[in-house]
Image (cartoon, rainbow, N blue to C red; front, side, top):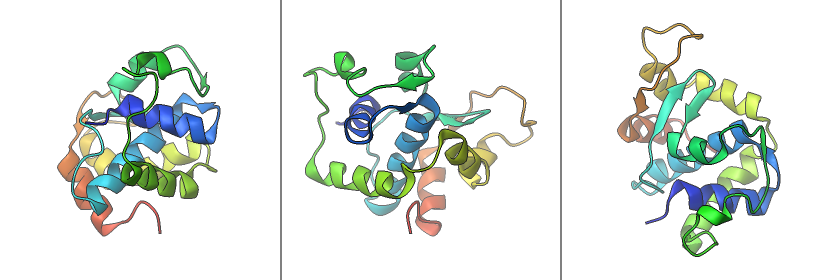
Length: 151
């Protein structure tokens, strides 16, 4: 199965250098698109409801201490040195990035803060509180089926 690292490396290959916050959110929205349109996850890794929006601890551990990440920087973490994606998966990611890659990481973070999956996972917490609660794939699927990622 595809991993979040495959998706992130593909996004970087096709969209170039970006902030790690933006990469995290584009991966989140790619997962949401897959769950809502195909009914299956794009990758198994989960997202947690961190202060700045959804973050995958798996991906975060690969870019920890970086603000910007460049194409090729995740390739050493891929088994074959290149993303393993089907044409259908690439097309899905391309649709998401085609609509959202022009936004900044902060803009995408603000968008996630207005949406139920992140808000519900942080229920009872102030905006400044740390949080490692998982944003459930079922919550993501339900919300983005009713509120499409891309219009």
